[in-house]
Image 1: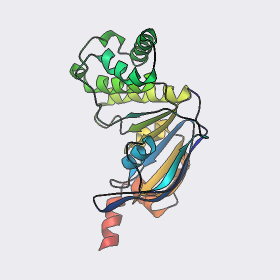
Image 2 (image 1 turned 120 degrees about the vertical axis):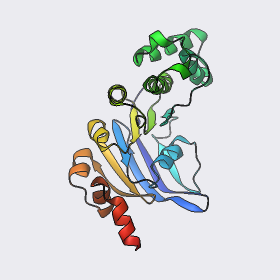
Image 3 (image 1 turned 120 degrees about the horizontal axis):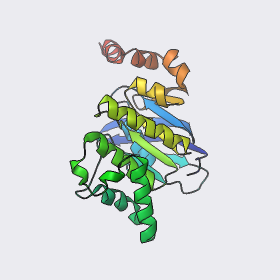
Image 4 (image 1 turned 90 degrees about the vertical axis):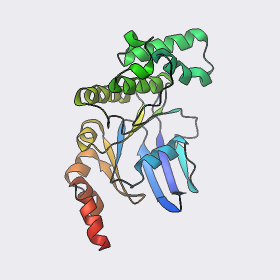
Length: 241
């Protein structure tokens, strides 16, 4: 799992339902550590993740990950998408396209479940696991593919504090292994604990980007200041009236 040189987005535009969601997005992200994307509802954060992953196609613009090499990506959603099978089988299905031998798949499944503390639940139905265990299973499935880039969309939004803390610890450890991580989160405490770099989106555009300490303590743009203070909705309403 080697570091990705960089992620470059130029002129990205995405429309859906007659509405422009991403509006000429230009962004360069480091190919290491954890980068958080924050901003108000409707800013385009989750859509940006899906565009980077290739789940959505933009109407315009380019996304370049690394220097031309094929960088494997993995996505963990806010609510895990699991099949009606055992925990082990849920990890194994993600490995099917990789052309591994049966022994290699077995080893990776075991390693992934051990990695997130679910090896003892390998044969249990995935849908019977607790919410925190299901999300750790989704993370194990992503990690098992050995991605260079891991995309996390509000991965702890539905979890209790203990499950959130465990997920955060695993995410930080995976970043330490060399996986580049892009995290979308409304939890600014979580962003402060995990991220090194922060991107603030508003209305489908980057309004500010920088180091975590600077963005959270001394944001420069009016949009970032308002969002971080929890005043963005008030500012938007006042501006429209």
